[in-house]
Image (cartoon, rainbow, N blue to C red):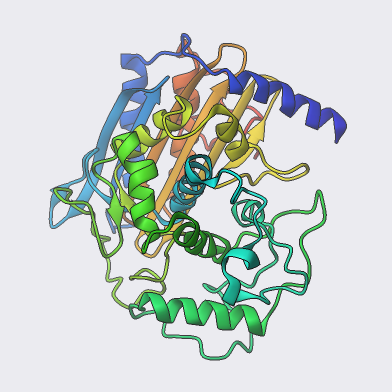
Length: 394
């Protein structure tokens, strides 16, 4: 554990001082990306989705494209909009970190307790010790409102829209029925839970003095990052054609306003996600210290704040996936500590269960490799990349 902690600290030290380097794109990599994207469209068993892909090198977009059908015979492009699902969490975490830096002062911080801000919420646990940091690291032990425990009372119809106040009442009721026993012990694995990020959205409203957390996200993330093509379920971005899944999702669970607030309600494009990555890496939203905090998980864990982080002696790979009925998403940033360079990738699809993560990993590593020998690329199915190493697991 100590050796792993020292290794992570060394790589993070380089990440703190990230600068541009020699990672590059090439026509051969464009050929690879196009072929792999088209192959992914062909895996969807007759229900052709729209798929959009974006890749950047040191903040410069090098490949943005689309394949398949966005809606009604219209091809998907790099500018097609998709529901992001849980990629929303990194944007909610960024909003909170920016809010703390801009307005926290001596009033609130990552160590502020949930019960001290959402005063009518206590008791959500037997200890009341949960903090903003615990919410963002998914380490509260709260019951999840999107998959309530057996025996939960007064669970609303998840196939229908829900008003904000009713959603809040339901979540509070659920947490009172099933109060958390205790915070996870140091080194104990996090428990992924949409409740954490829903509550983070309420904390943003209270601490930021805004009626809707979405306004804070626009102010602290979308606007400084230049994400003009991003919005929310129920309030989509203007001028963006939204992908439609190739099957009916009207009776699907938890994909309508306001069910996924804070945890899965952002709508965006791959081009805007690349802008988000660049704003994060170039410290346009908050300080380098907060950037490192965002991607550094607690000791013994891999889940940071809206990112899952993997480290080797020379690289950091932080990423997240998203699934919401009719949509699958994945994004990641691959940092090379030996060169201080980085690449980022976003893959969005309008279908369930599309292996967008495999394509994203393939293209991130292709972008990082200065040649196209593609050696040491990660364990990726040969049908997609035909290359392997141990960075990303089996």
